[in-house]
Length: 104
Image (cartoon, rainbow, N blue to C red; front, side, top):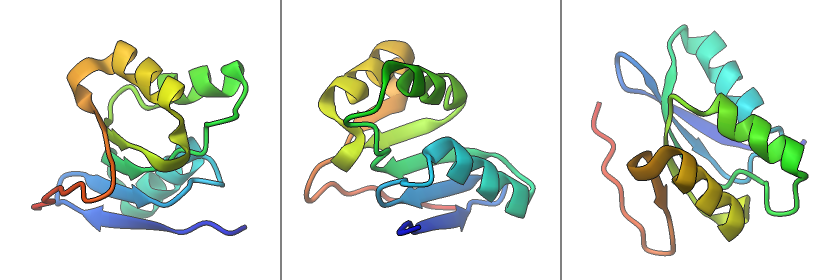
């Protein structure tokens, strides 16, 4: 599958950088947690939900409840808005030239 992710070890948790999440962001998150033995606390990237069915969108929202999210690209504006409705300030919209300092 054409998918690449980067896991950054923050010490107590993991920061996940995902391109387009073709494998499913919940699967990618669980994979990183299995490898590192700690939770993914932050995710930045696209979630590949732009044209997803409502069931998949809701499943993803429910399974990222404990995660700080920086969303853009193929997530879709409507889906980003749903995440924001559910999780408020823990969700940020990313864009070209967006900068974020990740400090372990």
